[in-house]
Each structure stands twice: as C-alpha cells, then as structure tokens.
Length: 386
Image 1: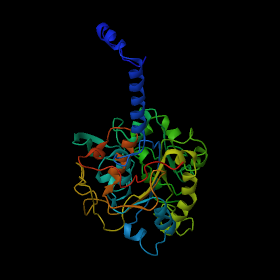
Image 2 (image 1 turned 45 degrees about the vertical axis):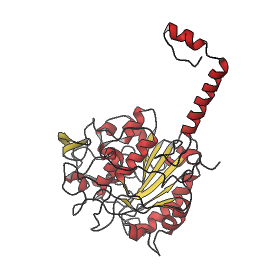
Image 3 (image 1 turned 45 degrees about the horizontal axis):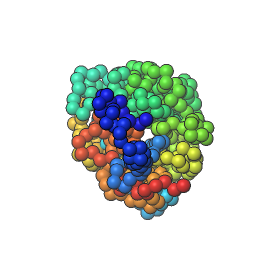
Image 4 (image 1 turned 120 degrees about the vertical axis):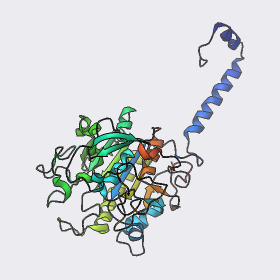
C-alpha cells in the first residue's frame, strides 16, 4: 500500500477509507508529479534538462561578435536563429582565468587569477568572506573549495572537461588533467606550433578538490574524446565544459598554426562541433548548449547583476566592476528558435542556472541575493519537440 506507516489507531481509521478514494488520491498524486516534471514557463528551469554543454570562446565584445558583417556569421546569425540570443550577458572580470573560475565555482578574482596565474601557485587562504568567498592570494584553491564538478559527482552525476590540444606536446603538459607542477612557471601561457592548449582556459585544474583526485585523469580529457562520448546517452556526461585551443577560441590572431584565428577560426570551430553536439541523442532528448566568451576585449569593464568585487581585489575588471558585455547564445529543445532576451546575466548567473537544473546548492556568488538564473525569457518552448 502507498499509505505511510502510522500509529495503530490512526491505521484503523485509514483502513476504513473507501478503496475508490485511495485510487483517486493515488492518481491525483501521480498527475501532480507528472505536471511538476514538465517544462513550465513560470519556472526558472525546464526540469527535464539533463545534459548541459558549455563552449567558451575568447576576448570579444558583443558589438564585435554580433555586428552586421561579423566575422562569425554561423555563430551570430545561424545559431541565434536556432536558439536564444542573450544580449545582456556579461563577463565577470579581466583577464581570462578569473572568468573561468567564476563559471565553475562562483569565486571572485584574486590578483593572481586576474593575471592568468603565470606561476601555478597555491592559493594561501587566510579567512572567509560572505557568500563563500575565500580570502587570500594565489591560484590553485585548497581541497575544501568546491566546484560544480564536485557537486555533480557528489550527487551521482557525471561531468567532463574537454580541452583541445591538451597533451599534444607532452613536455608542456600531460594528455589528461594537464597542468604545470604546483609552484612552477606555466609553459602553456602561449601556444606552441603543435600544442595550443592553455591551462588558464581549463578551470578544473585550479582546484585541489579535482587535481588531487584520480577522477581528474578520467574527467579532464582531450577534446577528441567528445565525439565518441556523444554517441550514446549513457556515455554523455551530464555536464560538459568545452575549451577550444588558443586559435579556435578566437584568442590568437593569427595563429602559430598559420590559421587566421580570431572570430574566423572560432566560427569554423563551431561549424564543426555544434552540429555534432546538437545531433547527439543526449542533446536531442534533454540538452542545453551554452556558447559564450570569457570577457570583452579592451577597456570594457562594465558589469551587471550587482556584481560584487569579492575580498581579494578592488575591481574585477581592473579598471571597472566586470568583464564587459559579451552576449551568449543558447540552444536547446526547450528554447524556441529566434528567442531574444534582454535580461541581464553574467557568469555567476550561468553557474546558478546549471546548479538549478540539477537541483544543487549555489556556490559562491552564484548564490548572491537577487541574482537571476535563466528563466522563462530563455526557456520559451513549453515542451521539447518529439
């Protein structure tokens, strides 16, 4: 029976309830549960999303990427027509690394992460500030500092970081969980002719909670593994973070590989990988793909969403409060083609949105009061197409 265990007198009373009423109650309960599992425009997330893919590009402001005559027509035109364009999406800092750290942990910049951590040094913690912000200096956070990856693993879900070119030159970094030795100069700051991987674009390796675990070898892997993982739902991680190399993310222009770099090469990367992701069984069933940049280029240090600087720097954007307006494009069976949103979001909003999808607590500034996750302005299709 579905009735809960109760005291003897209470049980005798319940046993006198007519069977037809019990059946009606059971049907009503099942109906309510089914409705709660469906996509609702009034909620912050579609409950059915089970696979999130994030692609991070480099150093382009909104007006550069989405202008008329853009160098990225596939991204700025084709993909925006297929999904949602977030016109008020902002980076959280300058330069690269602090933005990547924010996306997976909600932690604000340090002077060292703002400088892309040229020496791979430990974060020396001296205290704790509000909103889960560690106080101190350095780059590689102690084991008690958690990320979205740790949250997912703790709840039985899977994650992977897919890093293009990682391990192509084994003298620079290993092929899996690639990072310099703690305390050493980072040789991946610049591209080499046969290896354009950059540790500063791989946020997972800046947390001892990940690199000290055997799972790092299994979960922070070369990009080449993505295509085979996508072939079945069972092998597709619930959370996939994808970092192109220094040429294909738009960072370098031109590239040591003699490719054009910039938005031209970034657009070619997306033309190849986005159809592979969106045609996969996991994405078609219940996926969400987010494509954005780490920061705007130049002096744009604007911010949104009442972003706080944190305890370790005065200005996350060096000369201002944020990382500038960059925009984002989201694709999902739960997003109507051609959706446009002007709701302000940033990298902390992205983390909060992913945590909400998987029912996880909010880390760091992802839990800031008033911060909005993606809502009904983004999830504009009530039900995924069948």
